[in-house]
Length: 282
Image (cartoon, rainbow, N blue to C red; front, side, top):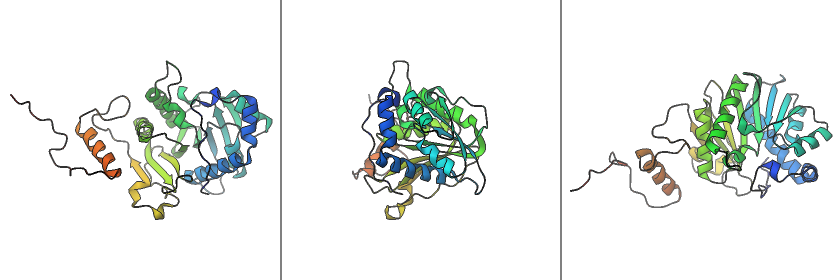
């Protein structure tokens, strides 16, 4: 289940680089189908759905319906939404079993409250970190997505979002907006020591906090915290609109020191004076 495929080298949202021919080619690539199937299987596993009971799931960024195929094989029903009309056309040609809707997840999830028993998303959410138009604000679009997704999910359900973050700042932005919208949960990182097989799954809980599922391949990692980064629905001090700590605040200093420690650099130990402002000298 590791999967060794690399992230496609595209710099914009899917609707900007997929025409129908490209969408069909992508959907017929045996390697891409294998990778997508593996990640979909893992995402559905992380949902923790009840056995022998069909559920109603939402697939965000469904593309040509490759993830939906696995959902259908497991006996569940699903609705897929995607911003690319070309990908949805290919999904219709493939006669997928789920219902399809053309929609931009950054504008919100257009379904009534409590409609779905769970949500999966494969390689889509990271696109919300890009400002592809002058009117796009990544923090606002992420919050709009997460707040409406929270509403559309039944209490006690989960959302499993597989993503390819470009850097730690994107991860912090995404998780901060999810927490702000009411979710609890955290990041599950499969095969954390592998360059190719490493996969990020944002595991979100609705209404009730649960224990994060165990990451695959984590037995080789140094410590549990490196694979499972938890967060809870609590107000965080000194955060700005982008989900980052205010510069020079105590939290900002602590986060900077922790990043340097992870990089193997020498950092002074934290004390009660860490981040404290000095009085001006005369």
